[in-house]
Figure 1 (cartoon, rainbow, N blue to C red):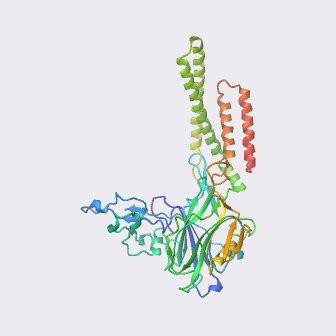
Figure 2 (figure 1 turned 90 degrees about the vertical axis):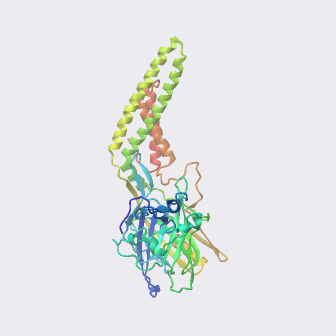
Figure 3 (figure 1 turned 120 degrees about the vertical axis):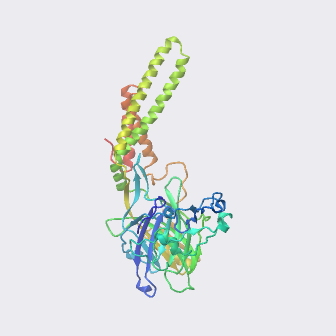
Length: 490
């Protein structure tokens, strides 16, 4: 599939696995495709308002007085960009191959990405905002259907109404047409489309999935139009291993309740019951690879920050000396001027060092790097009752022993050990997307502060003391590195 447009709205992961079960030979073979973007393809489809034609009542047609949320004016080509990472489909292991479940999975992809424009910044690979699951046959790779997309044109009669009352005047409001906006080309009609939003905690160490809506034209496990099924879809992130048994790093799900063919929903934005899950931290191997490939950049950026802090401190010393010089007695004046000169020279030396470090940093490669290969699996399950759905969850996401399901009457409570409370803003959070503990960051800053002090010789401090402080800071920095499986600095 091709990417269209120029606006970097979406990073898209698409994965597909064709499933065929003899038990469902009477039902068409189901293709399930999963897309992860920074916004939802269906739920976040914006209204489109064409530019006002010349000579018309521009004020009536131009929505400049309307809220711009969910509104796009002109430039259809920039409505959506589809960056696709295609993974070769892998057959599911028999332990996860359920007759009531349809799967999509990828070959290995890297979970973390490091941007290298300045200091290395590590985060989850791609802008995870929304997951769209499409159960449909797609046209062959290389197909381009964006030109056939009919935009969600705003009905002029509703322009002055609140956004919740806007209506569209387009003639094709099908989910297949909406998917064309992302160049997802459905061959025929889709069985179903489901969407869920990723929500991350403020410190980036936890996430959860919120139902963003669904359209179900046909159930995936039966052709009976009058049938009802309890539906749930799951997300699993696993670490590849030398054996066939993968280590599940994180699991999440969205329960839809009972659904039927023809069911539609716009989601549950006000539902705060979705559990929080810990973002998979970097493995020791991935952290070592990150440290090896970005070590020079980390050192230069840390020295740059330490030099900036030292210059701020020295400038404060100069400012304080200036105030004292203004009111100093003749017997102190000459000494204060000498101290000011030393501090000013030190600032000049540090500025020269800062320029040199910045030049070295600019000469390094700036292409982003990726780390920590994982496999992502998405599954859609339809069962005949809520109790069976809960048991299916325990089977699908709890096959490593992390799930415990207990029945109380007709209710089943599922507890996953990886569930966490929403992290607060204080304290040392578990290592997450920042890829380093606060203890390591503090130790690194103190080490480079001591290194800059020793190299630029602050006034009034003996050289032996500077070297002693540097040795202590280096030891603590290496201790912090060792605790994370990293090699010591020389």
